[in-house]
Structure formats: C-alpha cells, structure tokens
Image 1: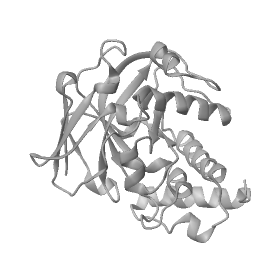
Image 2: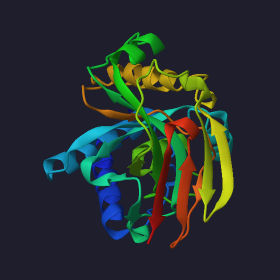
Image 3: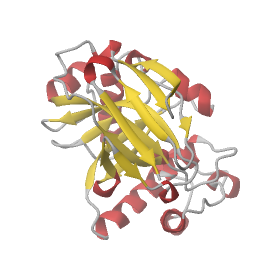
Amino acid sequence: MALPDEVLARLADELAQADRDGVPVPRITARHPEATVEDAYAIQRIWRDGRIAAGRRLVGHKIGLTSRAMQQATGITEPDYGVMFDDTVWESGARIPFDAFANVRIEVELAFVLARPLEGPSCTVFDVLRATEFVTPALEVLNAHIEMEGRTIVDTISDNAAYGGLVLGGRPTAPDAVDLRWVSALLHRNETIEETGVAAGVLGHPATGVAWLANKLHQHGDRLEAGEIVLAGSFTRPLWIEQGDTVLADYGDLGSISCRFV
C-alpha cells in the first residue's frame, strides 16, 4: 500500500461523514494520485468495520463492473466489490427515500443467496452453483460519496463500490432450474423501457462474478459466508433516477421488481 495508515483512516472518516451528510467529497485520486487498489480496499474495510462497530449487520457483498455495458459506461475495466448492510435492503414495492443517496442510479442484477460458505483461492462457477440456495432478481441502487467526474477504480472501491441499496423481488429459483446465462430483464422508468439486458453479459455467466469475488476475498483473508446475499453484477447500463420516479424491472418467468423514489 502507498498511503500511511493515518491517511487511510482519515479518508474512511470522510466517506462516513459524506454518507451522513449526503454531500460527496473530492476524488481521492485527485488528492492522492499515488493511491493503489489495495489502499482503496483498506479504506473500504476501515469504513465497513466502523459501521459494524456502530451496530450495523453485514448481509452480503456486491460485485461491480463485471459487464461490458458497465465497463464502457464507467471507463473502468476491472471488477470491484463492496459490502451490504441490513438497513440498505428493501422488498419489491418499496418507497425509497431519494434524498438518502447522491447521484442516484439503478442497475439490473441477479442476487445469489448462499446455503454454505464459499472460499477461494480457486473457486469456480460450479463451486458457486453448488453453494447457492437460490437465485433471485434484484435491483441495485447506486450511491456516490465521492464526486463523479474523473473517478477511477481506486475512488470507486474506496466508496464501497458505489453501493447504496438493494431491492429484492421476483421469483426465487434454484440455480439449476434455469440456464442463468439467459435470464433477461426489461427495465422501465415511469412506464417507459429504458434498458434491456441478458445475464450472460456478466462475464459470460453471472456465477462467474461470484467466483471472482470468492477468490478476491481470499486475497484479503476473507470468505463468503452461508446466508450471504451476493449481487453478481449489472447486465444493463446504470439508469439515472430522479425524485418521484417509479422503476419496474420485468424478468419474465422470474417475475418482476418495482419501487418508487420519494
């Protein structure tokens, strides 16, 4: 790592304050161009540990930047991951407070719910499918605690991979009940289809992203635990949301998810 421990702690505190205030902070890489990806994950872990110490409960992980659509949208070509807490999960039909986030966007994903732990360093798609209890449609709400313009992967990882919230819905299904590559979705905003996508856009198979995460966590001395929810990555571009918007994602045979930002 390039940044001293005291700088990592200060930056984690800045992000925690930005979460409370809803005001993004200047880019970390503009102030610390020497910062590395490992620095970014260290900042994220300090921020995560602070939330757990304050009583928040970790419920899972998200994976980002796993599809060409997302990589082209951000200009970043390496996947990343973040953590999800219990107070950031909604069910379909929820009214979500718009002002709780900054630069609000929505992504279409599949969520894997694990029946048993999953650990690297050589986890495969087949390991993921064996460890998964069920897969279900999900929407990710993106948030930004760091200014958007010029963000690099270091900024994004430090910012908990831009995670804001999770909306679960649709019809949960066993991982071997359908060919997950061909799960598709139509994303509506205010009754207009804005995005469409197929889950194979996530590294060829959405479980590939979960395997990548298990192997990446192993590098950091961690693993995925039984009961965790894992967002496998978006297979559409992020859709910008304004206050008052209603969102509907239609996954065909796997059902649908809706929410409104109030």
